[in-house]
Length: 389
Image (cartoon, rainbow, N blue to C red; front, side, top):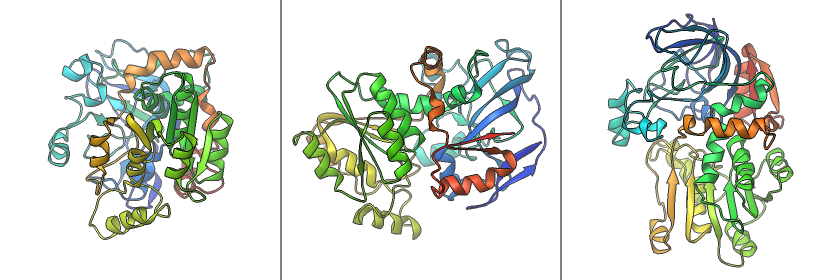
């Protein structure tokens, strides 16, 4: 089959790789009808994610048609149309039984590598390094889905691929980011990053009752898309974000702040963001946490900082003195997608949201390498890429 594979920083190729096969009775094979490039895939493209190996198949936002089913994957039938969560979960362990599917204890065969870095291991993920299981991803013609009786959700025929594809990751992630904020009717929510997850978080915050959403970015196309949802937008290259948020909230700060950026904050934003970039380039640091610092300072006393942007290692100079003295709550995590799928599919079906609004670029699988570069470099107004094998 054809698939997008990793061969080093900035080197994504469309190659022929072996077809996936049933390896366990709970597996299923799907023929991919649509897949997407995620912002966290750009971290791989930029060489920031460890334990990648040459030839690894990328991608974790995938849907398609079931073409083969293991004996114990009893919830699926050949011909079912499904969306596949990026988190792989067994459905039976301590964490899965409590709805924390992204903390599954059984699905990361590389868990000892994760333990050395993080102290414990999260669930395995599709297409996201040998730190998280080494699973082949879904930017391919076919995908093997382990524990297929737990993860994939069947989608109704009346909804298009583009309406439901983002149930695999960015819609649940943006929704969880807003849910973490425990939104009350009069709340102001500030969101850093108007990429795909940030866009979903903006709309989710309004769905959950926020009165005002402040969206922070500098890419014109992203800011315009945030404005169409009703957000007030701030360009961090044009104004001081802390001063403006304090002005807007009469000195109190936002009720909750969402970091939807993560490790690759723009190094032009401030002196500390430039220093972060230098540290990473000279191997003196692993991440660039400028946005997280700013979110902490912009949050009101006893507010919430919600973190869904991806960080990989250790963060420097986080203002914990500010956080503890002002009573902030931190909530964060890889999204336990399975937990959100039924309710979010219902919202799409009712017409409350159509996640396809975020798509700006479409292409074939063999156009994937060029589109990775377009997306990663924010060229041509690119906000979100969907590929059709």
